[in-house]
Image: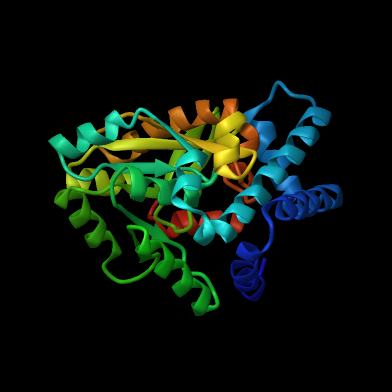
Length: 308
């Protein structure tokens, strides 16, 4: 989806009845799945590594569920500005929030490693209202107008957003960790820079973002993992939510490690267990395992990281 389409969806989606949006999103997901383009094949390749016990046919069926989950995320993200407080409360169920409160009381702002699973935007909106103010980093979107709309909305509900690549982001995250009073969730299951760290993900070498571990160690605050998956809603909760699906946020940790590599591997191990249980909610349509990366580009990544 290009920037202009994203901006148009952001403006129009909240005005469309939710049942119609569900049908359109599922249809778009099924069409993309049927075409089985490069992104779908990559999704299936990732799923096959997570669930090696499944047959090719079963992986294909799972990828259809995965695409519906992925398009559900976009549908919900586009309509998030129109979600009422009651709907927000009904759409989210959180587990082990005592880990967050304990870290806040004893150390400072905990860092939470996140994966591209479930709906992390909905989770952030809920956390900012029902848990604690949120500080996070977001990839710069284009056009600038949609990025500013994204930042403005999240600031209005208690989420402070730093732009990926902006000057001083790391220092601001460390200061936020030491300052306390916030939760700092960082998407980390895919390395967007040459500063990532090599880990073992379910028996396969992968590179994840070093951010969560690096910030946690620099700020001397706990590192948690926040996993997010969808669940079907029923009865009064479904009626209150205004949608048939909600999300479950599960906090785990804190994780231990004396260096970035060990600390990253600790949360990745738990994330791998989550992926096996909720594979279809992992929206990873890009290469994340080292064996799937372009060999020349990966060699350049290692050279820049000083690992070659």
